[in-house]
Length: 402
Length: 228
Ligand SMILES: Nc1ncnc2c1ncn2[C@@H]1O[C@H](COP(=O)(O)OP(=O)(O)OP(=O)(O)O)[C@@H](O)[C@H]1O
Ligand SMILES: [Mg+2]
Image (cartoon, each protein chain N blue to C red):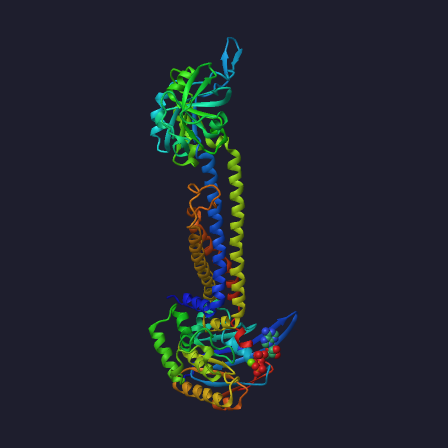
């Protein structure tokens, strides 16, 4: 064992009570760091899962027409602007060509081609406005997991069944097995059998949405071919911006990531993360102050011994290293104990994406253990530099004159 | 004993400055030591004995003058070079604060060798054990410094001073904090060891008995050597 290490170890073990107290202090700081990381990370997972888990990550639609300049002879131009219609939607006429490309993309988890429109669900005297989504019967659960959130009935979509939210069903006073009429904004009116009721937890879906078979939607909205939009779910929802950009470039269509309509959520998450970082910084600062003050005290107490060591031929470098190594050892042990305690304390909590409502949203996977350990070891080592340098400045002659 | 001096100081001056007040503690000391000499450094309190020893031990620098030992100019050498020099060539025995309290007697004795080698070697361990036997502490090898009596501590300090086979041992009142009997034992030990090895000793003391043991006596008064 290098002699510096031996001397540093001996000094740490010479006063076991004080050293354990110091290491405990460091470990508590590390624990706070790990806990905050896992809480802020878990909260983000929880909120994003709740908000974005059941919506499209990237939505592909026909590009809206840009204003176009048409030369009309001479140096005059005509500016062509299309007024988007509220009743006729732009259709993806060549969507079929793009579907395999999008589906084959490695980031893509599921793809749902849809025909959508507005209409009313009518039951006796009661009418409720809904947005109607026509989906492929195999892909009912591709975007919002209707299968998992079904409270009654089944998700099988024949050409004359409809799935609605439980809240909407309660408003209408219908349940599974009963018949409602669906009137589209194109004036087409058809009876549907209520096949299933879902409860997703999003108001827009639970009380104002209806899902029907894609072919039924084609009839309702007079769309014989083409699609209104393609909804895409990704493996990693944080890749949405990049994937949207890529899909837009590849297909020439308009691809909108979920982040575009959830800026507030993202702002909130960012604010949360920065307040978490503030708390983590304070934990690190506490570690630095604790280690620095303990080592300052120790170098002060050991001045006579440092003088003896210097007289015996210890270089300034050796003395400096003895105290820096002590700081580093305290950081390493405190870091190990703190991260281990953090992991042990966080492990019993269920992961935020599977946790029920009201659960404590910590995520044991997001404890940033390696970062906490490395930062602590580095912080404790840096904290020991000033006390170490002051130790190295003890004059060797001080032993004789005391 | 040969005639080549072990070390030589000329016109050594040391002044302390404290809040604008300058104190001249050494006022031009001239001194030559030959290998294997046993010298006593005597003189009234405040005459500058300890100050001279710190400078000879390269623990502090003189204000002016010259100091050479073993052919090296120790006035201009850098701190790192001085540290290495005293580790190899100078041993110390102080009055107080001699041992490192968190280390055993054996570890204290080995310390200078471990500093030199970067680790505790088996050879150093053997020599340290041998030295502790020589100072009569074979029973106390693994005792912590804090578990030893004053006299035992000084004997460990003597063993440690000899660890790296230095040419010069500087002792500042080595028996100053001991009772008569332990002082006598420590003194006999120094006389015995110095007779056996070619090591020079410079021992500052107030004790006539200590001085009497030394063939050469150097008297300091008011920052000057007045009798040699
Ligand atoms: N750091 C210092 N600053 C100012 N003056 C000092 C300092 N160190 C020593 N002196 C002065 O130098 C003079 C000599 O001190 P020194 O310790 O060398 O005497 P000494 O001969 O060893 O005395 P004693 O026999 O009492 O140990 C004293 O007057 C002391 O006050
Ligand atoms: Mg003195």
